[in-house]
Length: 185
Ligand SMILES: [Zn+2]
Image (cartoon, rainbow, N blue to C red; front, top):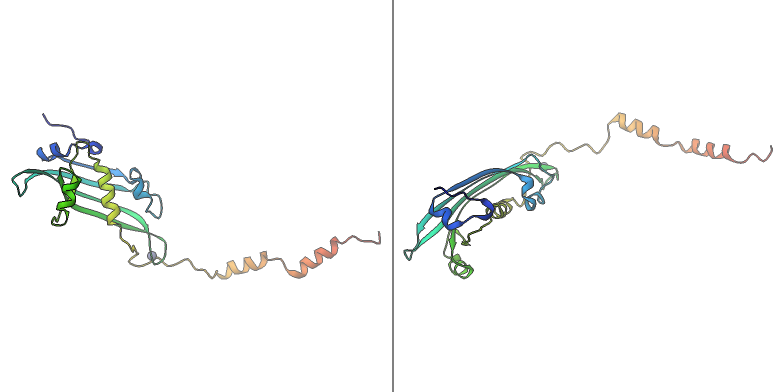
């Protein structure tokens, strides 16, 4: 019987042993740490991801669980040239190998091309997806061509309107005068 795998509590070894796969299109707001990096909330943006398990035999003839994770989303980041939002593709494609414990991960990390994680029966796959996307956010997101900046010098009509709205100093003076108590009456 096929086992149901849950992304939030993934039994990594079983997932790899069955060469199982999981995928989803999650709303970006489900990834709050990612949302914090955005120029605007992106309620309609989606994180598309896929995880595939695989068992491989390691150097010592021991079977090890591996995971291939791909994830991508297009989100509004702050353009570092014009500071306006710029829709940016953020994508990750990475292999992970699961090891017995933190000590093994530390010991083997340097000589491994793949990323090492500690094997778990309730691994939080969505936290990993979020970590990976956060790592792939470009340091300097920019528009290919920045949108024409909003003109700071106003058009003639606006200028005229602003001038009219500004009180004429002589009119102000006149108003003050007329408000003066008229001592004669
Ligand atoms: Zn820009």
